Amino acid sequence: MDSVDSRKHRLALDGSEHPGARDRSADPRETIATALAIVFWIATCTAQVVAPALLGWKSGIGLWIARVEHAAALLSQLALVGGSTFAFWMLLLVLRESRIGIGFRIGAAPLAAAIITSAIAASTQHLAALLSLGLSLMVGFLALAAAWSTARSTQSRGLGLALGLVGLGAGFATMSRLLALRASAEALTSMFLVSRTLATATHMLGLAAFVIGALWACHGRRTRGLFVIGIPILLGLFAATATHLSATSGGDSWLVLLGRFGFELGRNPFPLLPTFLRQTGDAMLLLGSGAVLLGGGRSALGRSALCLALLPRGGTDIPLLALALALASLLAPLCGAKSGTERAPTQPEER
Image 1: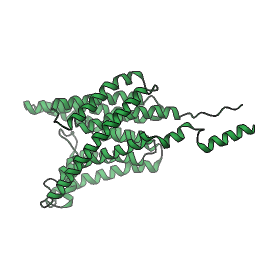
Image 2 (image 1 turned 135 degrees about the vertical axis):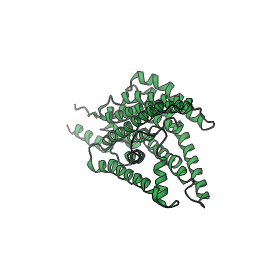
Image 3 (image 1 turned 60 degrees about the vertical axis):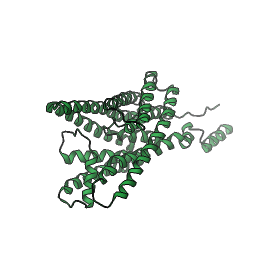
Image 4 (image 1 turned 90 degrees about the horizontal axis):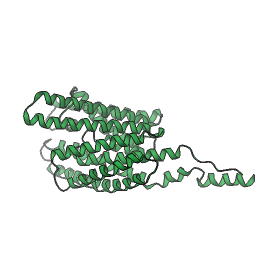
């Protein structure tokens, strides 16, 4: 009996009684995934919001505009190279993970490889519009398949549901832009209205994915819930208000710059929503994707996957954002498999 007690004491001291305890602290995937999610988030904000908003804001800031554009290009290349390398590593781990369904593993290999290759190719040459839309469609299918595999574990079901909504939104966004291209070429007003309707569905699915994912990330803790959900909503309302007030302000005021930030968050075709609500939702999604990464209570692997999944906001025809969603689609099933093994820690046998 003394030997059993001493063994329990030794296991408790070195952490081997719970196999996942040391794995969580020593797993390099979580550190790399968090770092990459931060780089993707900053690169997206810099390249899609800050740099375009500074152009034409006021005179005498040409040097700052050049610096911001150089920073955006550097961060985008860093996210592309690091994300592609890490995605190939995660793909190999998915193929080796027996707890992930065989169907997803077979289908994920060609889809993920095609998405990563297309994203790398886009860094050296411009992709045609149809190829970009095909890339968006592929990453949407991958996200839907990954959502089904992730939702099989009760511990990651919320992440899987959010990823599924994002994947469905990527499909709607692809059809929306395809119809918008045809409507623009043939001057079809009714078809452009259908395109905006699909864009509205994409926008609403993104908001639903954020709410569900944030509730999952908070893990039932009210303080974290207020941070992850409340702050993005307040900042989104502030950004939309600044955009509305900038129309009556001076041409070079800081309020105008904030208004330009809010305008650059959206993409054409715009959803069939009032401008104030649309810009509030756009800002809330971008800020919320960073909030779930920093303020959630789940594992770093799951929070990184959720951040990368929310980041595109329907813009998966952009290669870098398509790579972000593809990386989230590889991380989420691994998070589900890992949480499934850590749900019931093993106990030492007594003799």
